Image (tube, rainbow, N blue to C red; front, side, top):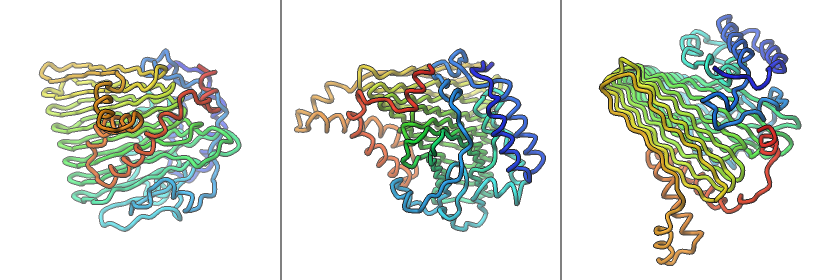
Length: 456
């Protein structure tokens, strides 16, 4: 049960405007959107009294006067700083809307790649079979809010037996305005049986300290029988931003899905990952690295459902917390009654780089089958003094030694990524982050961080 913090009446005007823009969308989508908004209106935003949100206060989001994001001019040169030019297939969204002029989509037989909004206008039947069928907006207020505002996002359909060698890159660019703004991208990825694909979602911000932004995104990923899919989530938005993301994965028989996340910046970041291993013999890897500075808050909520026998899942999450950064790991594995021979493992490791950094970790198992192998564990510590001493005795100064140890800790997660191009891209982002660790100790809070602290 979700307890409301504040009645969401102020979202009604925005919903009406969104409905008018989507007037030509099919009737089934109109019904889905209305169901999403009705559920959000019923529940409101979650509070810390809700167990799934126990360590994360979203009152700042609930109280802020966010307005729907307007279109904003972005030039190709504005994107150079994000280091994505090397990806051949790239979809660019500005404030939640697809921009074809900034995108590059090479043709590939058996693959449809483009805008969800355009697909709804031209081929709604291909979307109807999956959109909204898996994301559970009855239990999650932010998923309900996203469903209510479905207009655009990324759409990928990989036909049976097609193997994509190159990753598909989604770049979501937030361009804050003079007033707080919100966007609700909705992505749908369908990989049919025996297909293979790599998908990257990257959330960034153009520099603008005028007002805060709120990105509330949801992705439904459907993996058919024997499909192999790698999914990457990157959040590196401005320090005045709020990012709530939900990845819902539906896995068929013998499918193999690996999902990796890298959280680098944002006032409040919540990363929800919810795979359902629905077919016998399915395998899932959930791998992530979160690195919080200053007063940033990063929450990782994993809900893994084993619904069929002979399925394997692995969770590995590492956290690095500096300054007054606050990290959360809530990993929950549910093994349903019929999911015999389940093999599930959950591990969370955390490094605290300052006395004021904080981590809340909660590994959790719910097992309703009697023939399973499940383990979980969590560790919290600081940089190993013996290792630091060893490196310094070999001629490294303290800063360089810490940098090397932190990079090794981060590489535990990066080394599990099987796309060389994406892994190298993420390694660069992590390396750029590491020298900043000393900068944030005692730094003044941003506007979004102040409003969040005042609310909570």
